[in-house]
Image (cartoon, rainbow, N blue to C red; front, side):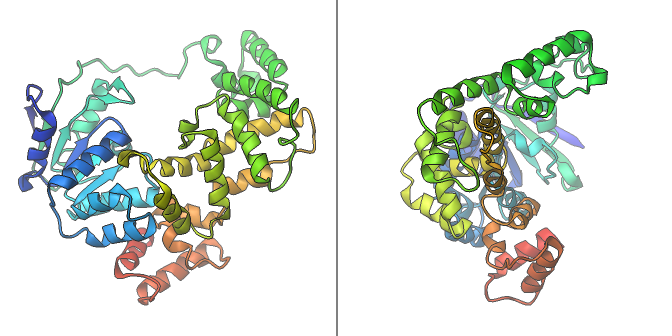
Length: 418
């Protein structure tokens, strides 16, 4: 695939030049690579305020308004013909963004590095606006992957790449046979996953010290490593301090608000609330409590949108919270439970941990969201079926023109499941 590369590094006003380029129809479909989710949201929103490039995205915008909230900047962004793709977005919505991009219904897609990780796109043009990922310069390998998105899927004979910064230096690629050449030099979070018969005497001694310091067996160490052992040690100390003041960590089954808050306070004494999609420990507790009692995901997200008064580009941090419910919060709650059990063995967070990992909704609904059917659609129809029965039920409703589905939703279901 031939690729023409254009250097725009010397342009004075790069943002306006970016908007000038994406306004040109001969560039479409175009990917705009940026460094972070907030950056993608902000640029997409600004572009949407300057121009409208598609009339084919109105149904998607209406769906977002009704199911996420009219105050979400995504609504106007999509209505104007721009898509956004990054790691905060729910998988079903992210998949729909890519699908409509490939159909040219969303001719321009602002994206982060998540789009180069196994997602096929039919881009004609790639505009590499930033040169960083998570505040660090990307390497030549990543740059080549991003650049390689131009002209994908055989739909465009010549791809175009616009560079707004100098590309990284070419570096020879070295292929290492193992992750760590010497396990004695490997980090603790890695060696605790090695089988006993595989480790050296030095590593065995290290693991034994970790077990003693944390009071955990081999399985417990592996769980603790999922949040990093250094944080686990801090959590152990925080649990001891909290238990000396209150019994709110001593619960089993379904916790009260104050009991959830007690665990969250311990976690947030070690980790920033922002890592879980909240500004404070109090807000994180409220999100968990509100999600648990919400009758539907639609109700939860609409209520959030009604109360949100922060920056437009961070409106979707609620999606980061939902991702943290899947992975991050369950592991931290489980590690806290391990340390609480060292004091009172009857503590049992298992039911809560399992429930939060699928948003306090039936697991089938979250799994289908991962497969491309948003939970806001599937939760209307679920009545306790197993996965196969429920998938067949959704397909039947979509094919038969159910009045509980819009034509757009029917097409979404059939495209995702058939």
